[in-house]
Image (cartoon, rainbow, N blue to C red; front, side, top):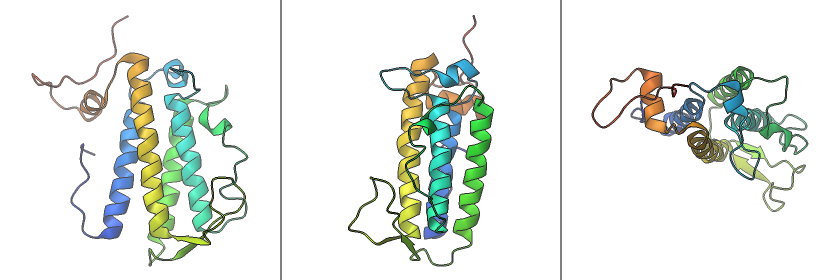
Length: 191
């Protein structure tokens, strides 16, 4: 996928296209990382690239469950632990989980004809408003785009602090772009 969302044909195509693009740029932040680098927090918080991927997998799983009105979807019981890879989890595990969650979201959204379909607001997490009874599927898609973009930005910053890599050189390396005078594809630093 190149650096821009392809032209969109309608609202659904636009929403799902922008969500796919944000998923992709998040994945790019993992390109070429070692397991140790994927787990490395770079500031006072515990944010790491691998932890952000794991968190966004959980976010998509949760919202897919909320749209399907599954019991317990959207609860806050794993919130903190979903930002960190455990000792028995790898970056590849987190990416596989994220891909599976994205596919599940895409299948559920494709099965819904009307983006105005109501999605009842869960009541079991402190961040859900008490004065709103339902959102729409459209709102959920917009929220997923926002949440993914926010954390993809965090991952960009964390990745740059881990090894100096930034978005377009990573994209150039991942997609095999030729080197130019103004853009060199990322390559790991020689040890």
